[in-house]
Image (cartoon, rainbow, N blue to C red; front, top):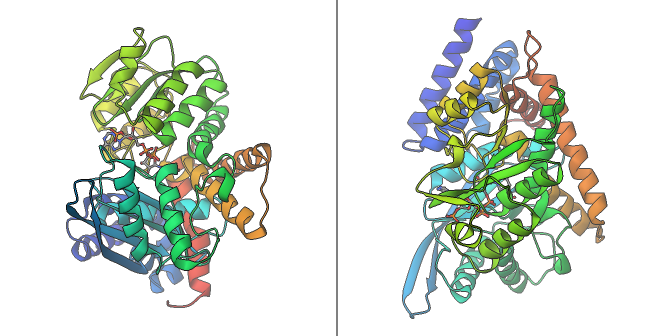
Length: 451
Ligand code: NDP
């Protein structure tokens, strides 16, 4: 049996690598899932015969397009636009748009692949997709961002719709970009529907959507901690990133009684031993969301903090780590440092922030580890709730949405425990999330035939 499992993984990965050359992040995401699922698939010959996982690893459709626009100097600029429609077995494609200079097809395929399992875990009827562009919003004027978004949506609008594919935000796509994208969508399609989520509160957005990913990550960490009789109360927390997810992870962790001592951007991190309280967090929100400044400025404003240029926060002593910036931002060595410094829990607000070597270190040390597809599913879950509210043309109160978010995160945690509990009683949340997310999609695909 073990030999059959090993062979299945080897053959699967050899095929994925041959068919998708040079897409390293995609290979990494698929490998983690195949390793978790192989024993289950080998035990279920129907899944092997119908090549269910092989089909999940091949996008249903990939759209690539030119995005031409004119900058403030009157020069023509050209970016690449993408939408990966990965899997629609359980609902319309759903997943964010990322605008970042590093964006390429392999990165979007990894994100879309993860999204399939994550969306299934939320219990809501959403398939998986992801898209974006190599457009870099940093340093661009609002006018340039608008021009770019309008050109991007002029092509994308043919491929999306409330029952087809519903994009949202991700890195570089926040409230401002969703506004410009939705404005252009509405103008071209002449309809006011829930085709994008993360909309403004006055025009179809849901309460708690901005907060959802960061809050949800903390709710998930809270559920993991509870299995060991622990809470956030009195804990020291290291957070990376300073964007949407990081801001609300800091907010919720602080509300739950913890002290968050780090926050970062792609240039470096700040360490504030006094903790990032509500007032300091408001400074970060203004700095990042309004003035679009750099996190270094935090240390200029608050002398209690130190800034570390070009470094990541994982050498800081903490009880809980919440990586909320980007993929592969915790190396094996950094994970070893976290563990050596007494960290008992890592919950991923970002997608795939821990390298495979880092995950091995967490598992070897037996600390709690919540992978992104479970821990950060709160964002897409509330996007799903935004779709529901748009469909029924009603708006729920913040309390109603937050209660639903909490209950979804708790259900995801239960699913991970159900499918990830090992014979020694410990929970492997990677396995639990992968298997729990897979089974529903696989059953839907078996029922729907070879499509
Ligand atoms: P934002 O654009 O709001 O913030 C991203 C943050 O991460 C910024 O502080 C940014 O710094 C930093 N960052 C981005 N790229 C890098 C890099 N290559 N190296 C170091 N730091 C980097 O994005 P979000 O907060 O929305 O997303 C953060 C993560 O969470 C991503 O992995 C995303 O896929 C994931 N996620 C987001 C969801 C959402 O609802 N928004 C839902 C689920 C997951 P800088 O300003 O210097 O670029």
